[in-house]
Structure formats: C-alpha cells, structure tokens
Length: 429
Image (cartoon, rainbow, N blue to C red; front, side, top):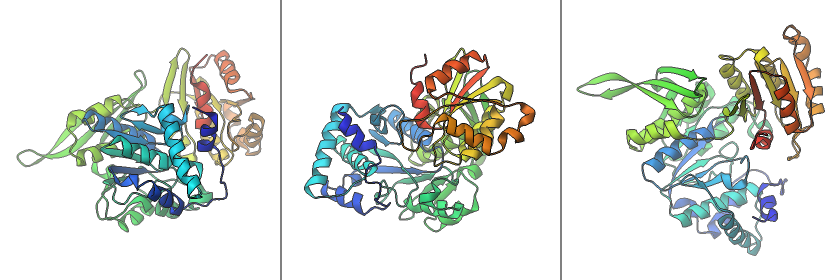
C-alpha cells in the first residue's frame, strides 16, 4: 500500500479539529449512510475493549454470521483495524476504498481527521461486504467519538472506566462516565464490568436495560501460568424444573483476571443474541488479541503487554505478582508523554527491581529513554523503593534493550508501556 495513504490515515493532521460528530455525519451522508446497513455492537471502556471485541467476533463467526470488526490503534499495520470474518482488509481493497472516500471528501470540500477518514472507510467497506454484525470499538471516549453515529446499536458494552485522556474526556470519573455512556441510545441493552457509582448513575440516565456482570456472575478465576490460560468458573442461574445454580468452566485463550471480565461481557451479549453455547465456548478458547499479556517467547520467557495507563499498570502488577517476584523480572518500558508516567512507573517498580528505559520515535508523543529515566529519578521512586535495590538503565534502541535484558538472566522479560513500543518486537531476535 502506498505510504502516502498510510500517512494520511495515521498522522496527526487536522490537529486543530475538535471532537464532534458533525464532520463524520456529513461525510457518511454523502456515502449513503452505510453505518445503518448492519447490526452493531458498540464497545467502549478505559481498558479491555479490544479483548471483548475479539471474544464477540470469534463467537459470531463460529455461529456462521458474517462479521466485521473495527478496533484501534493498530500494532503492526493499519489493516489490522478493519477485519472481515477475522481477516484484515487487504492493501488493495483498503487503497481502493480510501481513494473513493477521499474523492468524496475533496469533491465536497469536507474536513476529516485521519481517524474520521478511516472510520468512514470502515463503515463503507462493511456495507459493501454485506456483513450481519459490526463489532465496533470506540476510538476514544464515546459520546463525541467518530464511531458514535450508530442510531440503534443492538448492544452497548462499557468494560470499565478510569481516568484517561483527561485533556479530552474530563478530569473526573463522572466526566469520563458521561462521555462513555454517550454511546447508549434509545434504551439500548448495556453491559458493563465496573462497580463505580459514577458509571452506574450515568448508565441509568440512558437505559433501563443494563447488566453489571460483576454482580450477575459469581465464581472463581484461576491463572494457569504454565499454559498461559485463564480458567473461569461461573455460576449460571438456569431454569431446569425450577431454578437452580449450575457451574460452567471456561478455559480462556487470553491471559489475566481482567480477561475473565472481558469474556463475561462478551458472554452476556452473545447469550442475549441467542448464540449457541458451543459457539460461546469456542470464543473463550480461541479468541486472539495480540499485545495484551501475550507470551511471545519461552526461553527466555518474554511477555508483551500494551499497558497504556495507570489502571492498566495496576492490573498488570496484580496479575504478575501472583507468580513472579521483583528479583526475577526485568522490565523494558517506554511510555508516551501524555500519560501519568510516575503513576505507571510506580507499579512497574513493584513488578521488577530492574527497569530498562527505551525510546519511542514513531510518534510525536514518544519520549527518549533518558527523559523517562529523569522522570523516574525526579519522582522520588529510587528513594521510595531503595530497599529493593532498583537498578535502571537507559538504552535508546528497543531491540538493543531486549538483547541487554537477555544478558541479565532473569526469569521473565516484561515489555510494556505502549503499543508503539511493543510493535518493535514482532520478530524476536
């Protein structure tokens, strides 16, 4: 695919355009409003959107539906954001659809940010493909996101909320919740996995049909570190000659306690759509989502995780602390400038007493390794955690950082902090 097209779909052009739906609605109207031609499951949340989408996609495909999925950002190639029955859009089709949509933009002298342009391409492509369902992940927030042009989603999912993108979404959980619940329309059935009162209040303002899977499904979650599976046992109340509790056990192909919650969101939606139990089980056992607590090598053991905010870093710590002590782990990290870097480093410092800072140069929000090291020092964490003798290194090149990490002979190499970082490790040397 031509680099010019990739650049137009990924760069931060039109940076002064503010969030809102007016531009995308005008563009989609010229395209014949393709977003209205299929059923949509709309997903937002601070963490876990992509994994939840992957579970739902796998279940629907197994049930013989034609399924589109839209997620962002990508790790290796922009094609990953648009998949049809699990297969990424081809270079030729993406290029042809881009040319068609961009021509509409130019003819009518429209404005469209890269994400709005990609979103319009996605809606149009899936309409031409004749899909049954679109599993649609919000880009950022919800109410003012370019994906939020769906009139009547069949389900809305809000995985959870946390403070993130505060310059766009607001500085409180109430603001975040208000923005994310903006995808709920016309009393849409809504599924969520969060006990914050702020989220529940906002959901109740928009729908009477809601389910908190943390309340509905009681059971246990066991992490199998040997096979890197998540074992989920849940109690399901069913009607068999009256009501009784039955236990169902699922082995999730995605690892982490949080993935159990993501699966239960998907389970609730798939069950509500009357998807067969065998398809739901297939989704649990086969769903793939790269870069989320993903083991990519065994000797030495290397895990990559696209943790990108403070709440994600806490979940990462809670998960790995079950099986690893700080002395056994070396962390390779680089974090974007607009994140809460000290808070994220605080959790990484509890995971490991050896941290290698490296540089992200593929985005304007990236930081050099030396800058991250300075932030670490100035935050006082070296003094706060002196008892565990934390050692820090600064190595600009991500691959060189990995080679050095291997020489430390630790039990685990953890690569985390940003999708922009883990994309460097597609092929482990």
